[in-house]
Length: 382
Image (cartoon, rainbow, N blue to C red; front, side):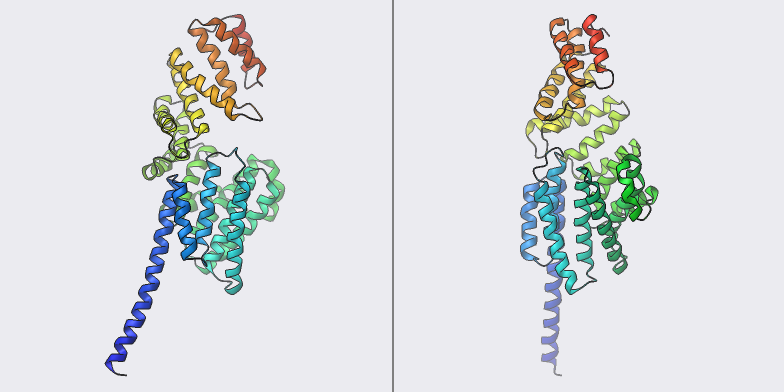
């Protein structure tokens, strides 16, 4: 073989290799950019980014999967709104169908198993939120099996440990919190919350695509179930360093201080949330504003600044009446009672009586009716 042929062959294989590397690098770059846009709550931009991934990598499930994740975050920002549930389920079904086509040709495709498992897992999460426990359990079981299979084929893929971590933690904790789930757990491997936390921590530090999702899971579960505020704050701080305009990350971070009754620190976060709501930043909707105004009102109540407290509680009450459709929230019940307190302190007895009377019309929370009846007889005093 002469030198010219060697050079031509070398150029051919080099060009082909470069094209493959370039395509993979571009794919990876697009996906990571889209993921950052999702967590930065630039959801319209993320949709456009993943439209490009779907177009250029039509046979790879990543584009359709992360396109569904933009819908998932729209749902997360207002969980009471179920209007996007069907769209999310349809998008996940597209991912599952595409993955099934790939697996028909190659049953050992790690990507297809990983993204199908992820689609089933997220569908199961929403079904659990909507308390459709049986369907959620089936999705969890099928998704977990696929995650295990993909790990067997490629044990170096750290991202799959997100599925392990979520399963091992929640399979241990959820049946204790929600007894309705227990009958389904006989079909599943035993959970282990400590193992789950370690797996999530590994992904949170070393994951490729699921690092941020793992950090958010840790932030939430350490707050909600473990009640470890310091550890929850650690992950919240890491999330906010990269995504300071994500209201969900901010809310959970601020709530760790509320849980400790440390309003001095909590209001720093909730005032920032309130200001971002006022400015109309993406994702900072009425629910976040209602919560922010409530805690700002509580801070001023604790400081005996009745006029400032009433100012924020009135905003919180108004938002609660817009948001609460089928049932009265704790925010509304507490706010109405506290507005009675604050108006008494400001010497506005007629207005205070109006709020105490309204409090008795609302459902009782803690001892709200007892308090309202007491202060209808005798004005509230600090």
